[in-house]
Image (cartoon, rainbow, N blue to C red; front, side, top):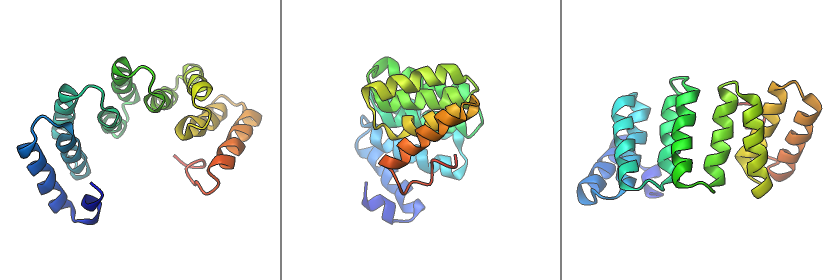
Length: 168
């Protein structure tokens, strides 16, 4: 996989297609091919490949985040969140998926629900990068600026070189 990042996109697509052909019961080829198709704008085919990956392994965090990202790029944050919640049914203790759940609730304008989910993630995983970053954004969205500053300071104490705390 590391080597794939070093080759051209057309070559990456060929490798993923070969993975699907050689290992049709492995979700990795489907996920990789879906990400290439997404970059090319073929959202429907990317979604089809993601769904196949879920059928093969419903406990694959990557595929749920990829499906959510496909919906996010359509500005459909509720559908993105539905994809994450679907993953949480299979992986209920996964803090990464839970942090994404809080993220998509926030993006859908459900700030109080997002805050509850994010606080739950941080209770079990206090250094969860995504949850801590989203905490600052939720507080800002709620007009709780002092709390937002505190959350961003906490985030920056753990990830001092991160620019993603300021932009989304």
